[in-house]
Image 1 (spheres, rainbow, N blue to C red):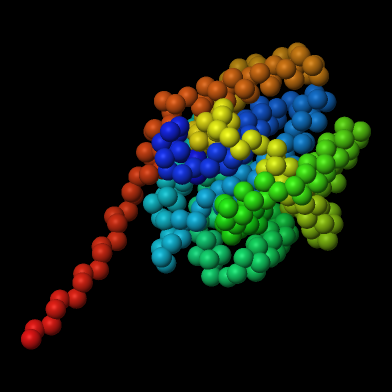
Image 2: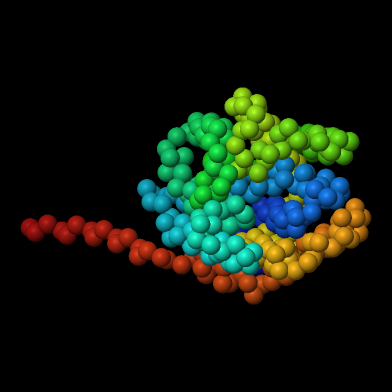
Length: 350
């Protein structure tokens, strides 16, 4: 999501690919909806159903997309440190604003990224990983990342300190995106075999509709910050199952999104601003208003309609074009001076 800064015709001129912005546009809609569902999803069966399907894949696919467009994170032996500083400062500011609105702003909480700001801190960690990823072949890099993620589940880092747990858990998604070429992903989207993933996703949706507890045994792993609680082997199997579901659902999403420019494209070009602003609005509704105590929200039809309509409205507001330039400029700040170009050797005297 953090790669989406820019808009409209300018984005086209820079060679943006509509299909990928459409994927990000779909994902940011799901992110907003999932966050607005979260406070009551356990008490509204329809929202619970939608929430579970969304959380099967929306974060792994978003991280994959971030990796896909992070080729410039490490280039010519240099890390893009300025970009990393922007991520870190924006993540910290986001965290402070979120905690202040939530009434939780105390020093002990500032470095515990248990909510949405974690993603921006995660980008710093993933950028830091790119020099290592760049030095090994893709299969080895993905395998090592997967091993790190599986081992990470053995350690309880659920307090969110510096977003380490989630950064480790979603590292394989970033690595896979980092190694993939956009042309290859487009070929996959245009091919026929991902229709099998669409069918498999439909099967998962039916299974969850038939049994509300169908995902319970592996679902804690989709959040990325839960350690193994029933033993290492069962925990690793649960995490691998969650990853497999994410792959299947992501392929289905990639196949189903349109390839042409449209409303989703514009959202996909502005995911960063939507990601930051919507969560502050939800925090305000949760902690500063009685909104989530309204009994009507628990109604499977009316409550679901209200939450979905609210999510759509907030997404549209946060996607306002006026917010785009400040975020883009902040992410483009050169915090550190550019390295001096080496001088050409002087010609020898004759």
